[in-house]
Length: 300
Image (cartoon, rainbow, N blue to C red; front, side):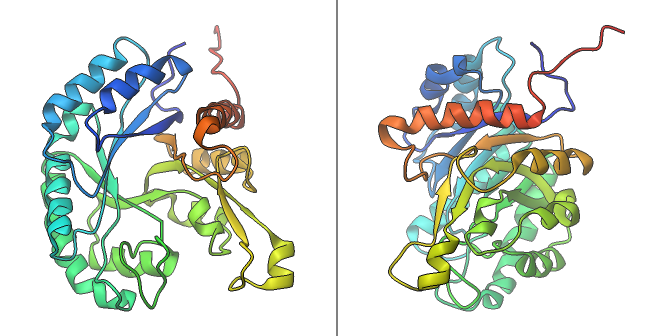
């Protein structure tokens, strides 16, 4: 069935760093995913992105599957060799997103390493004001994932876009309309933040959504706290965590969100390795049910 244009699709992420993203898309395109997010980790490894985009769309063929967002995850705010590769990767992804059919590029803001979050703001403004203009000229949006990458307000290595206080500062520095968020509830739950109110306040800045969840082990917190030897939270595949995705999708729809929810796998402590695709396909079907099930066309 063809999915209505203004409806939320459910898909998955596909690693593109190895050069085999198109082949991977071809392997799993018949598993009923409705969208894909090819993503790079720190570097594109010199790949021809225009050619990769073409091969990715060829792998999709005539299936009703879209690529709305491509990912470039690294730290473009600093000046080590890999950081420079990440910066070039952002430029290349922005310039070539249209070859994938994508209108958004997502990733981390970057960060001045081992410094308080606010120390990154001048460099953040310099880099992202320029990249936002480059993207706007091509009709591309930029979305920052809300992942702390084990950082916090005082220190970190990768990203400053991990909580609402940081978002206020960031969007004040870069008020451009094409800068927003790649949001998911998981990265709020792992810091014991209620993700639901964020949708009502911030959904106008949600350009892409990741399908990832978390399980908070409150009995561990009550007995050991959050800095003890026992793990107090697990990142989970949707359908196995604490989030009511029916409520999430309802709030997203009320806010007018019509993008994709692409599952971010490889984090669940149970459904991983040999069970990875079992978990992802379960998440795919679960999120579709939370969306309301299959689309029904009114015959009138």
